[in-house]
Image (tube, rainbow, N blue to C red; front, side, top):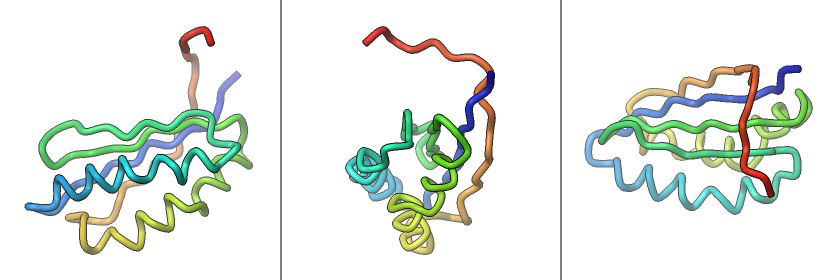
Length: 101
């Protein structure tokens, strides 16, 4: 059984790398307020390349996230922080390995 996910690629403007990293760190409380976001990861792949990877129990959760607080904040800050608009890809999780809780 697959689960919905998202991968969002972000390219920081020159000189805005630290601000983008801070924005992503500060977005955590917004994500924690979303009951249908199962997991959320903000990553840095190089000096200017960042990403967001998240998973959801169902399509309803993914759609709620796409219209939620993080998405709104990201789009509002995109012109200042990003070299180009974010690349948002809907993905399907085929298999996962998570820690026992």
